[in-house]
Image (cartoon, rainbow, N blue to C red):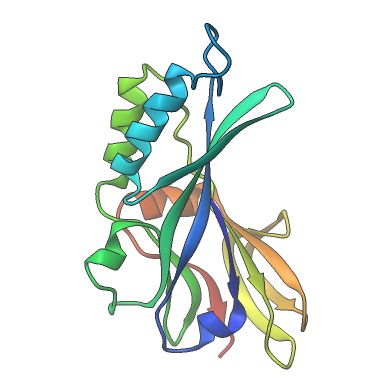
Length: 195
């Protein structure tokens, strides 16, 4: 799952709604019997993904090298921690507060719904979740923050200070441990404001 946010969205007190891209690896996009028809795995994915991520919409299906992917768009929300509405709580939330610059929160039961999809497809559909958030510094200066258990531009960051330069974009990919905590229902901080 990937999306891009502006640093100003993480620093203000407003709620922002936008789309995230979700790629689901499937065995094939087209039917082996008639390539003009969608594959059974694509039809299954189109039925099952909205059960895991509310309001998911299939955009397209494509092959890259020897792998096939169903591309979905899902709504996400950037919200102040504790102020999200029930509707905003149905999908991934990027949470923020005075201390947390960026955290992730997944709705209760996401892991159970992912497991049901895997069980229904007998493991044929991979539901491993990777989250990539590109943060664009649209502020008037460089911004220094603390990263915790994540990857910054594909470099591991266990606990340390980093700076995103003005007019640049960095990629934030929470670690598997962070994702597992979020899947357990915990709101997990990834980037923190400097005190």
